Image 1 (tube, rainbow, N blue to C red):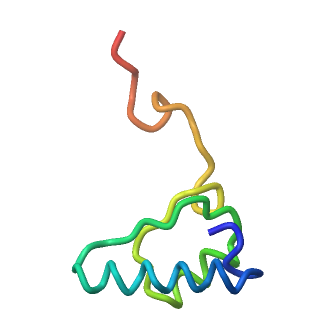
Image 2: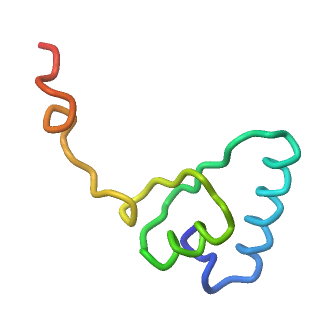
Image 3: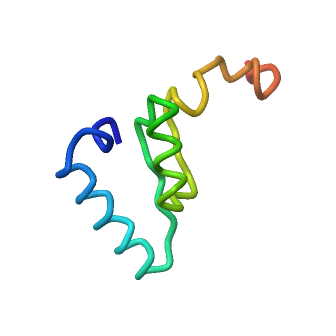
Length: 70
């Protein structure tokens, strides 16, 4: 996803993956979403899931899921 705003080849690959996912009735997770602009573009394409620094900054598991098992 890093280059979808600047690379025609990256956009072509993304559109192909979206068509395949739609044909198979499966979801698509956009990885490496590092910028708000990329996230906004993915939303216009109806990509339903994304991960990366542009979505949420990583944090320790124990800060979001309670104390880690010892």
